[in-house]
Length: 130
Image (cartoon, rainbow, N blue to C red; front, side, top):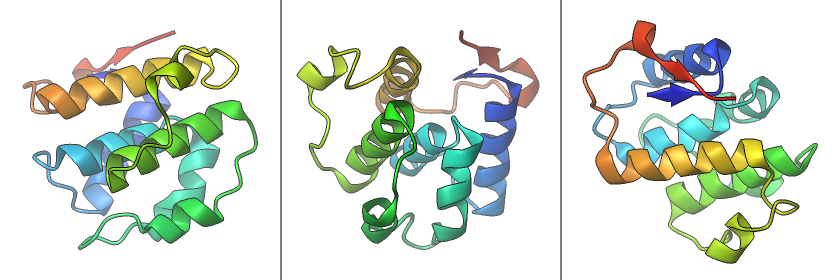
């Protein structure tokens, strides 16, 4: 798995453990992957996770992003988790709409949705992206 940095990996694995998220639930994992990219972003959502149903759409609607990266990450997580179409391909091509940091994380999350998270790697083998 590829993470922004070691702190991102720690937040992700901690969130999965604390919320009993199955490694087979690709949708839930992809949304949590995006939301854990930044500590302050995850701080906004971590107490709103419902083990049975995930993250309610009301948590996303009440969220006020502090910058474009947080907005793109939260919007993509909402899209993935609630199967909506808030971000489209043209948005992904616009650097002002989806900054590079968010774009890289979204691309990784899409890959995990497609191929899954069970790649046999564990926490000590995580990779970081710039």
